[in-house]
Every structure is written in structure tokens, then in C-alpha cells.
Length: 409
Ligand code: ZN
Image (cartoon, rainbow, N blue to C red; front, side, top):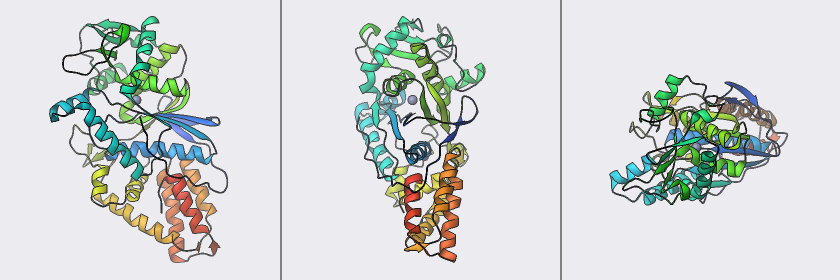
């Protein structure tokens, strides 16, 4: 699948900082040592509706990860998927009397436009579930060979008992896992399962639903977790640096994905760290399609909002916190953007290197983007109130904001 074009990332003076980030599985900060090519997998969208602020906040967090790594002169091998066949997509297409392929293609195209507008760096590989089916089938067959699967009325389940590390990604107790499984696409109540938490690897063909020739698996379609495992492991290998997504993916999606991969390869871990972004709400409710309270990036763009202001509104929150979108936040971001643009529009100003250092330091410390904004704010205030005679400083600050925060001034 085609990704989207990258915006230029300017090089900055001085040295980038190594990233320390909060790992869900160990519940602590980890200093990553990714080598010359850092490896990142972020779970992509299920394209049945437009990009809302919750998605944008998640991709913003992992865009910062990329930018911190690029600033340390590393290359980044970033892979993202598109779940372009799954229950919610099929249900929406059926409800609207539309072909599911058309819905997926349209919403994926809109997502690309949103990502370009927000200056999110693209993944090196952008892979759809449908195009990954030929990779997924042999993986399910191998899991069957190692005894990690069982069949129920033609459906193939993964047995969580096959992975001794099951439960270590999310660290949740069984009752919580069971409740979340029911909420988030699992089927813990289905009779005949060995463990209520066991997820589907291969869904046998159902009347009126798309299916593919699964070879020895029979006609059907892949489960959600194995899709990401195939796409990630076949491109990044085991033990890649970060598996990322929204906090609602920690369980079951990332837990199951890790267990699939670990049972398959007999190796541990699937990813070295599991990083999760907080949820964005509106009026005290989680922003989600099912709640019908979405603030859409594309709608704001149609309303004439500068995407750079949307990005600044996202950056004003630490990625791990849950927060609410409000109109006042957007107003603040618009004001900040105007102040920053005015401050960099002069030929000289206060020294820039302290700002470069402060933004680097803030982001390297668990992507503390609010602290990065404070540093740029302080420079802009100094520029507005007293100015400075450092020639070229505004250009350096502008390139810093572009390279590390993804905002073009
Ligand atoms: Zn995923």
C-alpha cells in the first residue's frame, strides 16, 4: 500500500539526545539503544471513518519518536498497517450499503491527506491486511504446527497458554483482561474455547462476508492480532524497538500480538518496549466512533483551521495523559502559532542554541512536548519584549520547531 510523501526534516546544530520512554510492560522509563537503524511499529487505522483527534494524538506521539531518533543521526525503519478488512469496517459498509473495499479506500485516502496536513512523517512500509494475507496464512500454519492453536466450528483460535510470557505486556489481572476482551473485539463468552481470552487467528468464511483461499486453513479471513504480527515480524524481525499505539491497544491487541510472535518463534520479546498514547475525549467522554463524539482532523481543515495549530494543540499535552479536546485549546494553539511565527519572522533574535537544547532535552525525556513548547514560548516572549542580536537565531528556532515538533512556522 502506498504511504504518503515525507516533509523535509532539517538538520540541527549540536547533538541529538537518546530517547528515554515509558514502557507499559515494565511500567517504567527505559533508555532505548536502537542501533543505527531504529525499528518502530505503530498500529494503523481501521478505515471505516475519518481520522479523529484521538488518532491524531497517537500518531503525533510516534512521529515525535521518529524525530528524536532522526536527530541522533539514526535511520528509522517505521512500519504501519491498515486493517482494511475487519468486523467494524464490514458492519459500517453494510449499514451504508457500500462496498467495503470502497469505504476502506476512501477513508485510507483521507487519512493520508490528514497525515500530510499534520506533517506526520510516513512509515517506510505501509501495509494493508488484505495484501498481507499471503504472509499471514503460513504464520497461522506454523502456529498450528507448534501446537499453539485449536479449531472451533472451522474457526482457528490461538491458545494463550502457548506463550509463557502471556500477560506481561499489559500486566492486567484475569478479570480485567476478560472484561476488556469482551469490549474490544474478543469473544470470551463463546462456548467451547479452551480459555475465554483466546483470540481468533483465522475466521472461517461466513455467508455474505469477504473471504480468501486459506490453503490448509480453509477459506476465511485473518484475525486482527496476527495481521500486525505478520506485518511487523516479516519487516522488522523479533525484538524491534517500539510497538506503539493508543492505550486501548495494550490489551488485548498488543498482548495477543506479542504472544503470537513469541509462541511462533520461541523467542522473547516480540518488541523491546510497548509504548501507549493516552485517549482524547470530548466533554468527559472518550472520543470514539461508537460514542458519536468525534472531532475530525478533516472537518477542522475544511473549516479553515491551520493544521499547524491542530498539531500545536496536540503537542500541548503529554502523550501519556488522557485529555479532552475543547475549542479553547484550539484558540490557544492558534494564538501560540501566531506568536511563534511573528518571533521567527525577524532576521535576528535571542540566542537559539538554548532553545534547541531545551527542546531536545524535553522530547528525549519521555516525549515531554509541553515542556518543549514552554522553551519555545520563552524564546518568543524574549524576542517580542527585548529582541536580541544573534544573527540567524530565528531561522535556527524555526528549523528546530520543524525538525523536532513537526510544525512549519
Ligand atoms: Zn496492530
